[in-house]
Image (cartoon, rainbow, N blue to C red):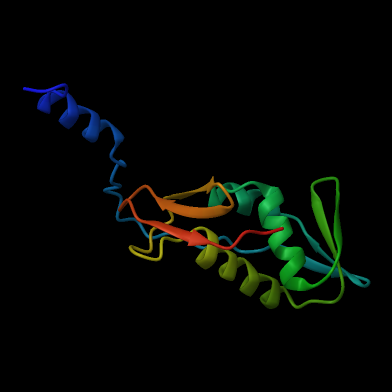
Length: 138
């Protein structure tokens, strides 16, 4: 047989396959904890939401600032977004982020991670193995 051994190649392929999640538990969308304080919306649980999504807080914050078309800053453990927003509106943006950057478009599971290849970003599903391009946040 040539340079490659079938059994070794098969073992290598199995090792590189994504682990398929058997968990059929329903993914619960994190709920935003936000209050209006003057002309700023104060969000107290953005780091916990980023952790639930398994995404860097910087990525989620960049998305939120773009979607809200505003500025904001971190004060202690709270994020202050300049402007008056309804908490439901902020929650809609969290759901939009999850649909675009967390949930697999093929199987709908949240078991994904993002990778960057050259000048493109991809959402890779650990449950079904799908790989989909996502927009880059600049």
